[in-house]
Image (cartoon, rainbow, N blue to C red; front, top):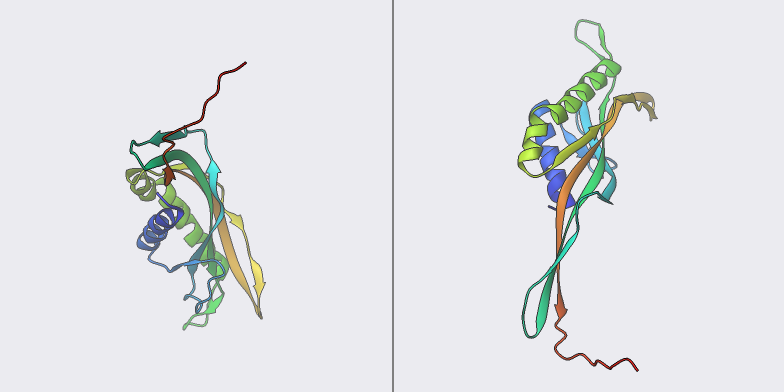
Length: 173
């Protein structure tokens, strides 16, 4: 699995579960309609405790070498919302919306997301508590709540190398 495949699984799953936009942090596109989720890989390809193997095929010209390893990635997920005036004159607080959406996203990693990721060969290692991440955004305060999640998956890298057909060897004197 690649980091891109992992990202696609998570983004599609979160969008399907929350029914809200899920965008890349610092993405250069029009801002999604709030409330929305944004994500960012904080760390990728963290060496894990799994085994690493090298397998070489046979051939006369080239040798295919395959490396399989367990790695982890830390993904940051943040819910963002703004205060909004309602038709009845009340205010819908962005903090409430962001907290509810962050809770829903976090729940996905424990319930249906846990199973969907597991079926794809991904292990949910740890889901951190939700924490406030609010920030001043132009003239308004973007209310943000988020959490980090650590995921483990298998990567497989292949490479073709020239076969060593004749090696010079000398005896030890």
